[in-house]
Image (cartoon, rainbow, N blue to C red):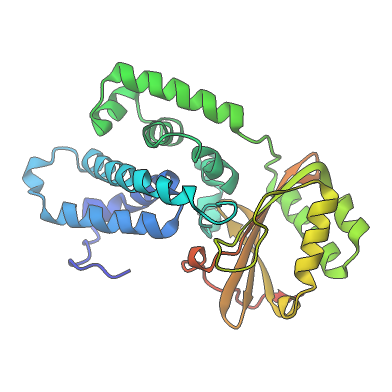
Length: 300
């Protein structure tokens, strides 16, 4: 997006902390577009502030981004209540060096972002600042303008909720890539039994079309339902003409699909005991605007 003010200089604190600010906003909001909008608004505030009054630029910027994200998240929750079909976060294609940051990679996974949706905006802010970026309760209290005691209570409640809802998936990326390749090959071959053999007995599939493209309106449960739905999708005209490319999606191995220089879908599989436990397919074109199309990927 284009800034209406001049871009910050390389030695400007906003540039220095931009990656942290985006990471905070994205984990708060679950969409790249909203996170970028928050950074735009934060930059406008930063550009207009008297720098001489800012003792700690990093703290000021994190506070600004967090509170802007809270405002946006509060309004977004109402919109998501009327969302058509399952809601999935907007995928973020991550570079290898970013994806390999073990201390934060799991917190940006699609599965974790879905869990964070169950928290209230304040709980989400406290959890992200505390558990992801390691801020102290006192620092978070200053950011959110709340008492330290209140922040401690919120942090405890949010952490307990996340632990209770957090899916227990295997995180070995090499195994995820291997199983994903087998899965795509089985789907391309159209063998129902072969596809089902890769799915866990309690597999769940979510597809987000947002009412813009065809997708399952409800989560699908069980190997038979999931496999038959997938093979039905692949049987549609033009689907097999799409390019397929392996890439990093939210810090994990995933698959990018595209047709005529346009991204059409992003797929991420979650594994448990070597089998596919969760399947998340982002199809909503509005959520693929920040995704570059496949480059040189093979077709089905």
